[in-house]
Amino acid sequence: MNHLLSNSTNAFTNISPMPTLLLTAMLLSLAACGGDSSGKKDKPAVQPDTQPDAQPDTRAPFDGIWVSDAYGEAFSIQGNQLQRYEFTTDHCIQAEVGSVDQQQLTSDGYAIDRGTHTYLRQTIDKHGVQMYSHKYERRNQLPAACLNGVISADQLGTIENPEQEFAYIVQTFDELYPMFDVRQVNWAEHAQQIEQHIVNGMPGEQYIQQLLALIEPLADAHVALVADGQGMGFNRPGLFQDLQQEYIDIHGAPQSQEQVQALLQYIEQQSDLLLQLRLKQASGDQPLDAEADILWYTTADNYGVLMIDAMESEQDDHLADIHAVAALMPQVIDALKDTQGLVIDVRFNGGGSDGVSQVIARHFLDSERNLYQKRVGTGTTAIHDTIRLTPAAHTYLKPVVVLTSSDTTSAAEIFVLMLRNLPHVTVAGQPTQGALSDVLGRVLPSGLQITLGNEQYLDMDDRWFEGTGIAVDHPITLWPSQDREQGKDHALLQALAILKGDAELATDR
Image 1 (tube, rainbow, N blue to C red):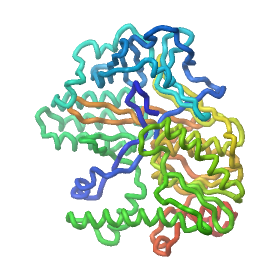
Image 2: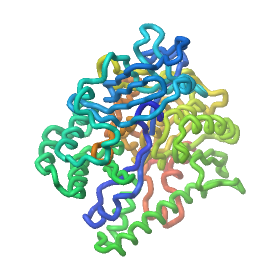
Image 3: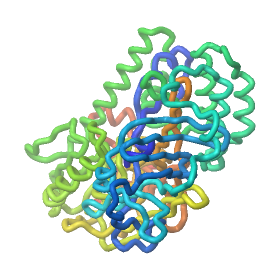
Image 4: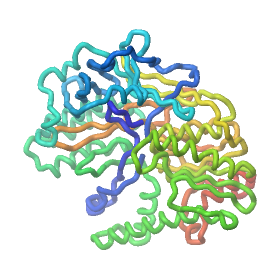
């Protein structure tokens, strides 16, 4: 969820480490990932930590200082003036100064709890979804680090102090990032090693390389460094890396710019081929738009294929995306209702909005269910929500195979998390990326930005899939080159074989 009062989202751009320094330099601007937030009000077994209610009839109900320790964020509202801060124990940055319409905040679902009038949260419950923002606590003053020595918004991009900025980055991860153990990184030791190379006055390019070295061992698709609008990061290998290695096995590692371009062209061509091969099983003259993020068809033997390649549009408006998908899904279900079974292909889905994932998932629910938990932080602004959804009016309850890969990321993983335990659903393919948390953004004094995840998404048995990804019930080799050469989408054919009960075809390891 994009929150008016926060800097947290779930769609982001990452790249992965390349085999040569030349290739690394050439590919820093390539994109790969995505996801967002969660919540609703359908009598959840565990209600969100605050239950918003109607505001007192005053001109400025949100006036005051609001702090979320769990997200390291604070803001001050006075009338229509907003100041937003990002902080740790020892550092504070005034990240934003602007105006705010308090009536619009109310319209957007922000409300103060009805009991103590101490906590503020946003709730979105359109189309049966449950989406909640961070929880903010009313305080008498800003956090201690924001009372003295705060870096003001008009200073951002003008301060070159790598030593101080590095300390802020390290402390941000220390206090907000809960994933060092699952990603098997000794953060204190690693950060100390990198710190030895950080000195004031160092060239900016060298500083960026050291920051990339800092985040590389995390291999987290939601941890990235942003410079000049380009996201740079490291994630678990996916299609890009598989095709890259495939090319290198044939031609060797590129040693020139011309060879790098040939590699990139190969990856693009093979990726496009895979997207086209998914459509070959469609029967008849069904109109198919290969560029659509949601696409469906029926096969000649009456099975359905639903391809979902994103949980968001390019408009960066999650509420609009929720409305659009809610309007589309009844049409999808109606078109597929008479099929014998359905493959839902999310192999290429980099994420977007949890709300979109929830809207789609409701059309496959057999009953009202607790589907997953979201936990963030400790203390008075900690969050522990249980997401409980009810079935949509139009549902599909015949056998379903959800086809996943390590490119299935973020909000797409939340979709898999919701469907994986349904009695008519089988998950096949390869484990997902393992980056379920929303993206928490941080502006830096130098003008760079850093992103990280600070949330835990768990199933109802408290299992956490961050770092490892969500496992499959039926492993499938996803894109072998020999099948592509024969014009076949191997994984899709295997998923259809599972639906048909073809044991011989569906024994792929």
